[in-house]
Image 1 (cartoon, rainbow, N blue to C red):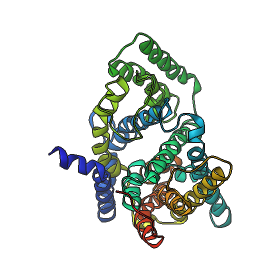
Image 2: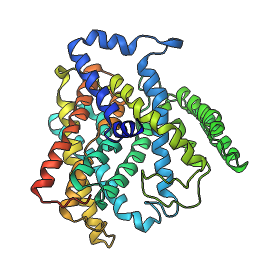
Image 3: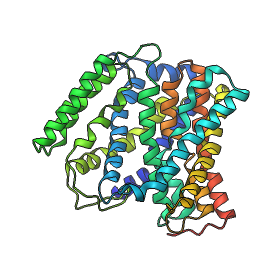
Amino acid sequence: MKKHINLLREFSIPLLAGVFTALVWANINPQEYQTFISSPLLGGVNLHFVVNELFMVLFFGIAAVEITQSCLPGGDLNPPRKAINPLLSTLGGVVGPVIVYLGLNAVAGDSALTRGWGIPTATDIALAWLVARMVFGAGHPAVSFLLLLAVADDAIGLAIIAIFYPDPSHPVEPLWLFLTVAAIVIAYILRSAKVKNYWPYVILGGGLSWAGLFNAHLHPALALVFIIPFLPHPPRESVHLFEDDPRDTSTLASFEHDWKIVVDFGLFLFGLANAGVGFSTMGTATWLVLAALVVGKTAGIFAMGTMGKYLGFPLPDKVGKKELLLTGLVAGTGLTVALFVAGVAFVEPDIQGSAKMGALLSGGVALVAVILGRALNVRRIP
């Protein structure tokens, strides 16, 4: 049973099943689907609120764990010189899509679509990892390099959501952010008091942080991002991204171990609540998002990674120009975070649905990357 569960998680089956179910349901019976996700549940909140405002707190919390661990001494982003090329490539993978999106929108789009520039900036970590393993093999250094890019640009994506995508119908009320500041102080006090159980951090710090963001009209899904770095952890990191370290029994590792399975299977509900868009909504925003993800990510990562190499910051061993090109292409898989940002970037249902369709179509990168990898004779390392 454990083996089957791990296979489901490894291949992102819950997320893909949720996306497929939502797409079929929304196109066969859109009224029933909309009623399902918007009808009040317990406490008067609907499924969309439960998933995007509550469950996604855990999703971004797990992402914050990976970022925290990778920044520790011995981690993949420490020391800074070791991380220069991945970070330059990450910058290209964020700026490239923005340039492509805004450039194409200026030529053939609409001013109403400008707000969607942040949608293609992040990478779906789980799906990109899966596709990279298919293209390069599990042991290829390009897989770890891609994971670094995905984690780093998701960190930037978190900042973009927090800064640039407040609720347009509710102006930001910054005074409430003092609650989030208080939450950070509480987490610091708990850490100083050597509290080893993560629950006080999550309930006291996370709860107060959530309340501050929610009442300030900023997205509360980021609540744990401010708390996670304070969870006690080892002074050094001894494994790579997404590798389990059985020797690490720290508070940070315990939180990830206990909640990652919940997040992995909970992504079914995320896909169900967010991917239900009709094919009839495909429009300009669809192609803007798709082009920005596929062309912008590929070109940006390739250009900046190559520039970093010529500046004296080498790429990983066995990662040449064709591997770097494929890495950029695979990073164009924007599904989860792109869907999330599309949901906060646009309020108008047709535009939102059109943008989400672009995020969904970016999943087709997988097939293109596998075919291109074979055509370029990229050697797979099991």
